[in-house]
Length: 377
Image (tube, rainbow, N blue to C red; front, side, top):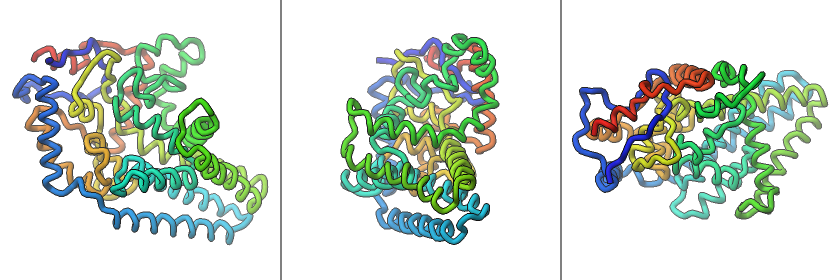
């Protein structure tokens, strides 16, 4: 069955994921040929040994991260009631985000060959060091990977404070209507609240008896150590005023860092209508955006800058994603699939402009390259 075009897929300005007129599709894309395409790509990547796990690399990463937390703890005790503690708060934000990247990799079963080792690593690191429920994360993130940017399926684009679907923008009235028309400018500041959202969503999930949370008791215990133990330790050492300042700086910077690492990867890319089917390969490539910048960006973003490769091969070690990029890029060029990559700054510019366009109700079908491209087949 040949893929048919959706009526409209909103897209960020200047970020068309489809080939130009000079990049003709070599053959019609059917579900059968699409499956063959992905198997071909997977074979090429596997032939280079890039799907093999590197446990020792992750162990070294865990040791470095553990030493980082230990050092932050020692610094915290030594500084006591000093305003220099705000630097410790900033350091803790970086460490928690890096721990979040590690838990993310474990949740995708990138570290160990057996499921239990990965699950418990993600559960312990996520709940204890990040304050993030593994059960909550898996429920949300699995839906995102299955249908990135698909309306009604991907919870990352679910309408909330920020509106991602242009169809929801006109529903906002009054102050909310004023805000949504300018929401792009507020997006980065709002990322400072991401940590509170992660902590709150995690606590609600593990305490909700109707929600399915494997190893609920362990999650509650580990999560409580972080969400209760950290404030208790901060107020005990810093006192009330400095304690609130410490937690405020930590949560804001943690949210900015964590949210800022995930935001550039899909925001402003096409939204997929509820009733539209697209094959796995194109679903993952066309809805994802890579961020260039070399090894520093790769470390800072925990490998999430290689979002296209990560979505194509979610169990691939984050260490190997960069090595697989040339293979994926060349393959996409062969198949006429636009491979999207930009700088970190440019990705945020695209996101801000896209959100403002959504807020203004921009639904111009002529700006949708998906409709035009698929209808020419």
